Length: 493
Image 1: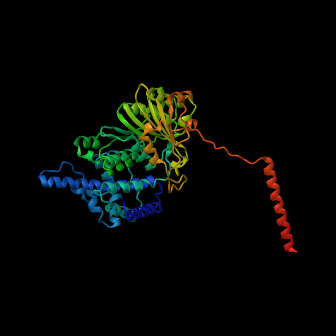
Image 2: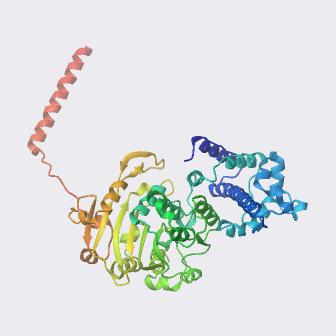
Image 3: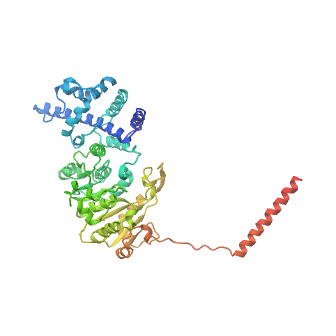
């Protein structure tokens, strides 16, 4: 677990970046990420060196040659700040005129999934003092402790406080955890997030296995699946892709399948019926040209809205029997356009819609105040929707203003408890937090999935006094007021 001391160090470094003119939170995280990667690269070579010495054979992989030893973390971390900074910013003649950073970009591609996306990486730490601060902080992290390094990176990511383009923003970790707990990933699942961002959903699935099924890691078959083909993320933003890759690796997921491309484009058309579980918070309010969207998605719902196209994409990506839990803006649930109705009808009639969890509008503050919901559905290809479970979440454990401070009210435990006992939900009345709605009623309401369409409000009868009695009471009050005024006048004489 991350300590208060490390948090304090991170906060100080964050402030130093800002005072040094690096104000973009993603840039700060990316620069720290590069340094974490450099440390890991050196540790990989140290491990290879130990193996070679014990076996008495040449090293299989070498990232630092004879003339590049000065570029290793274990060497430059002990240099004075200016000398260290020069290694990052000035070409070193004895090392093919490379810097530490340029060398990292060249060899990084051979050192794991993070290194594959080093193209475009730029060194932006402005001063020797700041570089030394960050290096010394990272050097104190226990890199052999998955929890410590994972928690540290999550703390860094929590500092992202600005929305990105096309409606991108970081999904609250407790909402991600709720969705993963509801879906209960299995040993055999192949899991995908087609709008991966910082890879929060994939990381949460990995943590779910460690928390609930740690014994599975003793099974060689599961371990091989976990380390190779279980996790897939798709993300078109190169910076987010690098951050997501590092987030996964620091949480012990070393070899995820990551693709740097637009999920909705023709470049992604080859991914069909590949996954058994999709978890995502796709971009809201984005708008694309028809020409840039893969044609099969437009056949499901012809629209330019990304939130609708991503639902069509998930149906295409899932295997038969595959499940999805997706965050959508409320407009997806009740929008009246042809595309809105088409995607809802497709999910409900051609597949199985399991649940709608309506969330309060403050969940995504301070990024945005949009009202959202979680849609859970299963790809069947032949229908299967019978009753849809609705839950009206009004609290998530945090205040619904920009501060998002912890509060006592929290519906999430209740959501999970009721979701795991759906048989008992069938008897609930429409005035309660959750209830079932049959397919016929949804069809009759033109595929409207807004919870307010089906929730019933219980009104209490309130009896009022007769008008004549109320008037009499007002007169009495007036008389009392006049008497008090007379008394005050007497006191003033």
